[in-house]
Length: 110
Length: 113
Image (tube, rainbow over all chains, first blue to last red; front, side):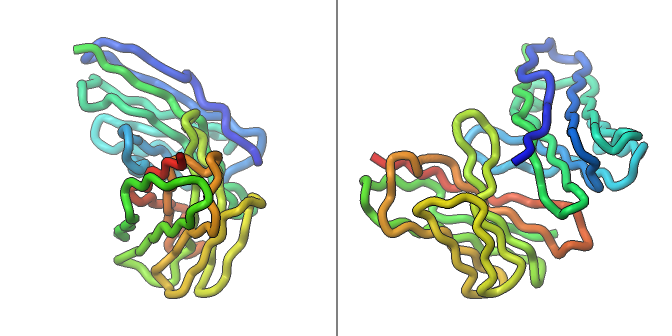
């Protein structure tokens, strides 16, 4: 099945820096989801987006639903050590199928 | 919001042995339920999904099976495990097709030796 293109694959940043990652799809999505997964645990839903152009925040996290409906962005501002983990995007297409990105591994250096 | 429980959290089984992983959901009714496998490369592979009791759709032909005996219970099974069945299994829940949110359980780590 289709897999979403998520970039970057990994990031090493200093504490306090901002982070940006994105996902792109070859097809149109109705919903974009962003998750964080810690080692050995299930993904935790961070943000859900439902409309093209929508910009939604959850604390220091901000995500946007791309205008073309084929991409989405996640930004983390002023990173802290507990932001470490793997961030996934997921999209729900017009056929009600979920697709997932391969994840961005974030390391925050104190 | 719904809560998804999976057990066991960790399981070590010999090749050829049976498997039963359970998933139960609280806080919602008539959910769509999913079983995913996550390999070391982090990608999520859809194994089964269910839109109601007794209704199972299989996405990948394999020696695994799924059952939904109750509205909020989803079970992943195998009669004989293979080495390739090792992985991290995730149960997920969507509260009907009117919402696009998908929630995951804590996961079950299966090691087949």
